[in-house]
Length: 162
Image (tube, rainbow, N blue to C red; front, side):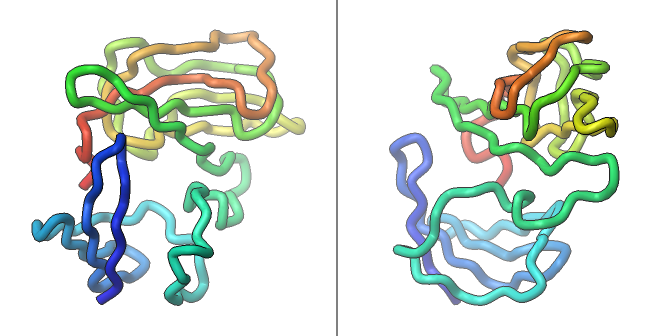
């Protein structure tokens, strides 16, 4: 079993990675067991990597996107008072906002389409990076965005995904 210590919002979690396959991973976080469903694995082969060699990057960036669907952009964790954290969904590439499919206050699920943007003459579905509630929408239909621009902030309970 591979063991890791993760720091999330200045709190450390001891994580032991058990079984992992294309559909789910079995984890122990601070001694508590979780089954984590994997939306997209994106790696042909799993192999242990020394902790010193690991750099933070979204798992979706490792996989080629399906036609017309942009890879999930990096979600920047943001500290929010009250034990919550939020993720900011950023534009994966420059483009034109065609539609915003959510409203502030609306509950969303990880993988749910939240923004439609046109980039490189293709329509791209931008998806929620986490389960939670839409806290703030930074774009509207007709806006041009640059790569990395914040589009939607999703508030979620701390460790809710586990």
